[in-house]
View 1 (tube, helix red, strand yellow):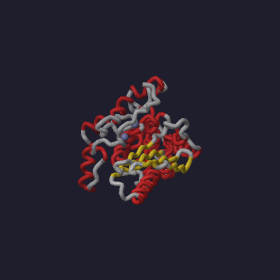
View 2 (cartoon, rainbow, N blue to C red):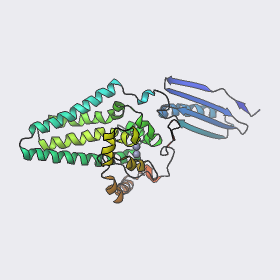
View 3 (cartoon, rainbow, N blue to C red):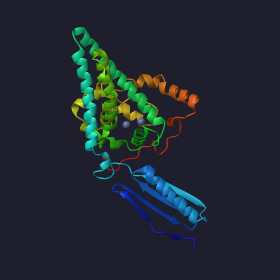
View 4 (cartoon, rainbow, N blue to C red):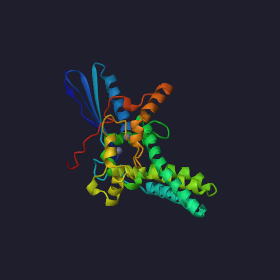
Length: 312
Ligand SMILES: [Zn+2]
Ligand SMILES: [Zn+2]
């Protein structure tokens, strides 16, 4: 008899790292596998290994169909992956302390009105450069590499997951959201803080890295609902000093290749109209033969899943 159904097996590696794997042999000798994972890579690999093993045990199976379903963070009440840990808070504290130390060093080194003007100009340049830097970094990790990329892998996976489940950023706690960039900020500012006080340099470095560190918070606010955001944040978004909500929403719509900057978004129009990122993509392709992800038809990774818990 061809048609038989096998019992499902449940593999649980930790509280929120569970894998449900089931299969059945249909009358068409087709193995159907359904995999639901919350920590996709390792467990998905385990599930597919299991499937291959079964296939070897059932050589008559002619067709294998797999459906891989990643359950997004945030669907589970009190999802721990969105919570801040004490380590996250400590890194954000280190990042903030290093930014404040750098700005303080700039202030202490400043003397006279002329130097204060230099500090303010350098700080303004740092703010503008941070928006540009956030765009270049966001473009790079949206389009190149994957979870296995050395050093940047977790950020790449997080940003690509963000395109599929953008609403989760509004449920992610503050320190959880900022900790990766805070860690980088603390390490990058350490050598700058060891340099002798230079008002312009320290004002630029402190503002540049401070804005980059908080870019994930500005990004989270751009996904917020106007009525739920603090009025001051809405006012800054409407003034174009923080990335506006409508501008960033355009990034989450096809063709998914524009509006990458997430500090103030001031560079977005210029970069998109001048097709700067398209030019960089051509450069990378002809130099290294690597195609950016945005050249392909949008896949599941890019397509936003509707959160059925949100009010319409
Ligand atoms: Zn993106
Ligand atoms: Zn976003």
